[in-house]
Amino acid sequence: MTMTLTDLPTDFEGDDKPHDECGVFGMYSPQPQDLAWLTYLGIFALQHRGQEAAGMCVSDGDKFHVEKDLGLVTQVFDERRLDSVRLANARVSIGHVRYSTTGSNLRFNAQPLTTRTNKGILGLAHNGNFVNAREVRDIMLMEGALFATTNDSEVMLNLIARESHMDLPSATAAAMKQLKGGYACVLMSRTALIGFRDPNGVRPLVIGQQDHPAGTGAYVIASEPCALFAVGARLIRDVLPGELVWIDKDGLHSLMVNAGKPTPCSFEWIYFARSDSRLDGIDTHESRIRMGEQLAREFPVEADIVVPVPDSGMGAAIGYARESGIPFDYGLYKNPFAGRTFLAPTQAARDLKVKMKLSPTSAVRGKRVILVDDSIVRGTTSRQIVNLLREAGATEVHFRVSSPPIKHPCFYGIDTAARKELVSSTHSIEQIRQLIGADSLSFISEAGLKQAVGGPGLCLACFNGEYPAGAPLLNDVDKLALEV
Ligand code: SF4
Image (tube, rainbow, N blue to C red; front, side, top):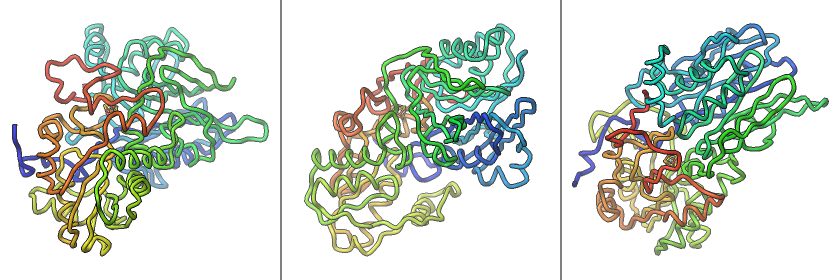
């Protein structure tokens, strides 16, 4: 199949990046604290993981407040709304930020989700996807279960509620054994906080603790360490793949439910996680620099300057410049006020939209430029950026990418776009080079990526189609309909 860039889909937000679908946060505090405010700070630190909905639950052991809505954390939680969840003696809270695919019924699916059981109310915040949620839900429907939303998180919550004859950690462990996929969740009752991670540790989850003179500082569970630091906690450790941790009045407890081969999402290090994060013991910024160094070793080219696509290509560009000895330069200015914008209906409008965000500096004039980015999804934005550099006087543009070509959809909570929209699944590297108008184009190898990140294993399924945590049982797995 051949296709031109003007054939490429237009119904996306315009940054042409994979999108993480959620960030989760939870706190258990032995001492009463303003957990509404602290949860706000925690999910604000995770805003990069989801910008379309935000929410939180707060309990003092008796009352249980929930607020959620569409929008950024600062838009959902103005002072009045934050007050509405505030409890003087709050002990437990969870929070969530959500990204979702275009067209989803977002308000309906905003989290945390809540349900009532014979042991009281529960709240769940979920990052990732359960690949067998559809089958499990169909069985539960036949058994008489009711579902209020269309998202797979509710299947997990219903499974836990169904086991409410058990204590909450045991009920959660039983539910974990029934659902497959890549996920990290926080769950709360009025008196306890639970965090759990899929058997392969595809999605990240970390534990931290605030300092307290008596050693009873609040515990915090979050998608990334930046959310711990935002509330004054230090990182204790990662939740292990397949582990369930719970925190109650007796402290922190752990149960290994279902350990598998660790294969955390490589895209956390390539792009998603904040550059100040450290996941599974691997520093994000340092690993991005190593990817750039590896790229320079694998695909050297004569040039005058190395330019990152801001901000996603920053770390890899630093590494490429260091390894090649070619000067790093600030060749693209990113407008800090350009957030998510309208969907542009025409190619001309899309070109202008990129110009709203990025503008070349004088550094590229008359220069042979090595342009470094973390990924190419559809290729549309890449072509526009190459054009910007040429219009600004770059004599050559050599595109280097710190991820391998994305050829397969993600079933573990990342919106990589449907297979037919992924330019690398339908085009050779040489065809993509021609489409984006670069003088050369190279992607880091899978082996090079593994070496740069390090660690015992990685999920590379969107590059090689080998899904470590299983794939959905669909005849057409072109793109899982994430909402079941
Ligand atoms: S398929 Fe890709 S984006 Fe999805 S979890 Fe695996 S590495 Fe991450």
